[in-house]
Image 1 (cartoon, rainbow, N blue to C red):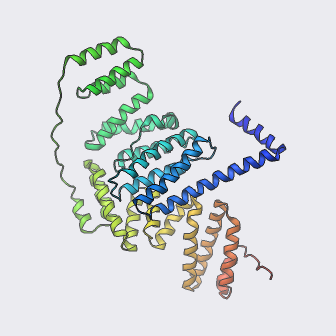
Image 2: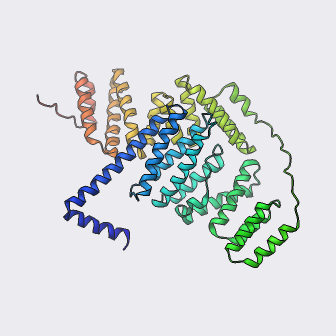
Image 3: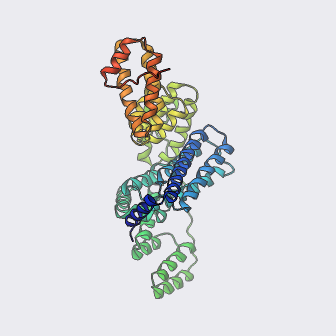
Length: 424
């Protein structure tokens, strides 16, 4: 039977069997609390030292693995994805000489792949994330397309292939081209195109490992005579081609501007120029490290870091930076507008801070804006499943500011039901 039919049968049986119903509900609540705790650990891990960070992230990964092994029906991909992104960002900021954090990243990618297979996300969104990591990332994490192949599906694979083909057609150089060539090879493996894969491998400089891979590919495809012939040819020559000497490329001119006045505008100018020369991976790590160093010193610098990340369309990183480095309230409110769509609970404190800040201005326009923000906060609470918490918060707020008659009038005008005070 299909999963939907089985679910209906189980639901019907649970309606008749209170013990089974309680067991199912308890399991659901347990998994929900496990996920909430995992997210909380990630929130606090960034403030810890390397050793404690690795330990907390390890606990998150243990939770993911346990739920995956148990066949959880919960969508674990968002948590796994967040863990991968968080560790990747942390590796840009710390000296991981022991490799302990990098080991956590490898495990996180493995679990993310499993989570995607268990509950496939949008195929094209997953493909875009992989392309972003491969072409715009700092050089990690290491991703094997074969691990994500089933989750990517036809649409995801097609998007990656189209992007790789475009990069190669542009005659890109440096790391960008190397990445595209590696992905082209992996795409051929995933699609099972033996001829294309053999052609790609045969075009590489002659090496023993390449020849052995060609032989394995041909044998796996049942083309044994071709495999034997290739092995014989490979044994007849032992030429080793030396790698061409490394040619140092000129540093982009925008680097000087960034060093003199590091900020979002200079960062994005450096990015635009470095992408053209294929040096952005190296430049990005150094530039972000400088922006984060400054962000730890002032709110204005934290805002610049957030704007730089937003300029790269890295909304998740921008949010984490805003929280970690305490960006200004206006910047956090701006981020909360989009963040509340997928992560409403995380934005509730931001909206509350904004409401309080507006009230302290004590002028009619600010009171009107505070009421509008309260409407947004009410919506966010509903999305987060904490509508009752909003009512409690609003009741306390009105009690504290009950003498501000203009504020109370604006709240009522915004069609926000004010809770009745509790009777003694």
